[in-house]
Length: 355
Image 1 (cartoon, rainbow, N blue to C red):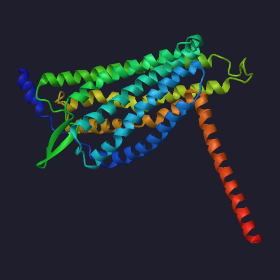
Image 2 (image 1 turned 180 degrees about the vertical axis):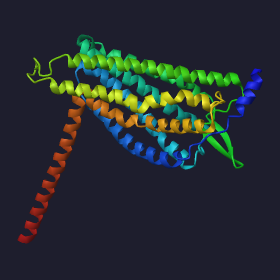
Image 3 (image 1 turned 90 degrees about the vertical axis):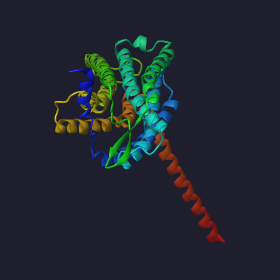
Image 4 (image 1 turned 120 degrees about the vertical axis):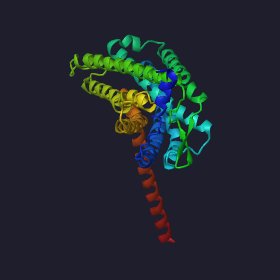
C-alpha cells in the first residue's frame, strides 16, 4: 500500500473526539486556580523580592523567582481558556491570542519542570557539597542557569507562536474554532513529524524526572544517615527540625512531578497516536477514554501553580519565617488599630459627656 493510500486510510479516523465533561468542569476548576494562583504567586513574588538570605540561598531564590514568573504567565492566560470552555470549545478571540495563551501553557509546564529540577540539584549540592552551594559565584550561576532555561523553553515554543493555532471543526453545519485542538493533517510526513516531536518531549521528560528522583533519593539518604539529634555547632540547636523540613521539601518537589506532570506524559504518547490517526486498530471507546484521560491530565498540570509556593516554604526556612512574621505584623497592626479606635471613641464620648 502506498503512502498516499495509508494517509487516506488514516484520515478516516481523523474525526474530532470531544470530552463533554470539560465544558462544565474546566471553567470552575480554572476559575479557582486563577484566583488562588494569582494571589499565591503574587504574594510569593513579593516575599522573594524582600527576603534577605545568605549567599548560599541567593541561587535558589533566583530559581524560585523565575518559577513564580512562569506560573504567573500561565495564570494570566486562564481567563481566555475559561472563556473557551464556557463557549463549548469555540475560540472567540483572535488567532494571535490563541497562539500566545497556548505558548504560555507550554512555557509554564516546561519551565516549571526545569526549575524544579535545578532546585533539586541545588538542594543536593547544599546537602552533599555545601562548599559548592555556598560559593561566591552562586548568584551568577543561578542567573546563568535561569537564562539558559528560558532560552531553551522559548526556543522550543517558537513553533507554537508561528504555526496557526486555530483549526475549524464543523459540527451540525456550524464552524467551531478550536484552539490547539484537532491535529488534522493531510500529509503522513507531517503527522509523523508531529508524533516524533511529542515522543522526543516525552522521553526528555522521563530523563529529567529520573534525575529528580535520583537527586532526591541521594539527599534523603544523606540526611537520614546523619544523627537527627545532632546539635548545630553555630546555634546549639538540634538539627532534627531542619532535616524534617528538608525531607518535606523533597516530598513536595517529587509530589509536584507525580501529581502534575507525570500523568500527562504517560498519557501523551498513546493519545498522540490516537488523535493523529496513526493507530487505526483502536476502537472508538479506547480513543474516547484516551481523550478523557488526556483532558484530566491537562487539568492536573494546572495545579502546579498552586503547589509551587508550598515547595518554597519547604525549601527555605527564611521564606516560611518571613510569611509568619508578615502575618504576625499584620495581626498586631490590626490589634493596635482596634485599640486606637476604641481609645479615640472613649475619649470622644467622655468629652461629649463633659460638655
